[in-house]
Image (tube, rainbow, N blue to C red):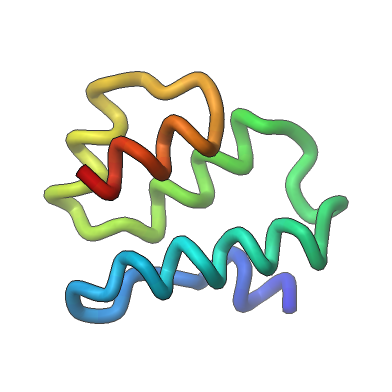
Length: 72
């Protein structure tokens, strides 16, 4: 499950499924990621480059903010 968590990425344009699965894995494996900053880093790394750049540029402080930015 840890491998899936770190290798999870958006398939095609299905951001909704990516976000849902990422959140599921984050809940199922809370000790995989040591802090919120690392959690956001893993989330952002799974996004397509175009979305990744937008999210990174806006410097979200929480995973929820990062998700909201990605879904705009």
